[in-house]
Length: 318
Image (cartoon, rainbow, N blue to C red; front, side):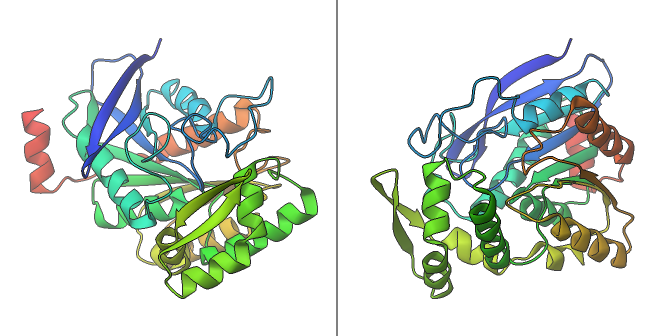
């Protein structure tokens, strides 16, 4: 049976809530940090209905567990620990999602990794990051600067500027109606062009009507995302990478992952890509076998890394 540790860690001036899932074993365990997708989400990968109750439709009866819960279960079966956390302003974490930005979320992921390096159960030489949607940018940014990160898993990744991803996503959701039941999604899609224009002018905030309530959003996160395309980051990465993408993703077209894989290969990596037929952005339609296959591929890529002196010292002290 897995061991579950509910914990908090410091991220700048904030305290973020997290769940550490550990398989049985006395040796140091390989471990994975999970970084969620766009818009307010919980550590489980679901929409954040707790801190933002009016932003999302109620959870459908019989809906599967969130993507990160399913992935944590699949990883622990393969002897791999995982940490998933509520982003700032979501779930039980401090702060405000509305006032946060992309770069602060990247720093939060770095802080999560730093907090886990004192855990004696975890193997600092075998660390990976899974990025979902927006988490692609976070995972790539963290891995480029951290030599101890040995592997990345990317789900529903984007490659080009989020300006293009947002426009393509709006068009796809116009066509299919997918996720339009959520007031926040409907509001952002309705105001997408104005949001892009204001963010490009580097205006500080924009107010949108979400379910009849006026909400002020920090535009820095969009402006930063427009100018931080994952494909540019991918040219600087030299790691093992496993990519999965739902064929019916209404947030990032599968062509984005194909492009990202090509850029990663051109940079000297050997990425793998699995297209999950019939699945959307959150892979909710994927069966357990597909989630397990992704977990197994990632676990197989988590080769031990040489640690820099400072992490060798931390490893010795823990």
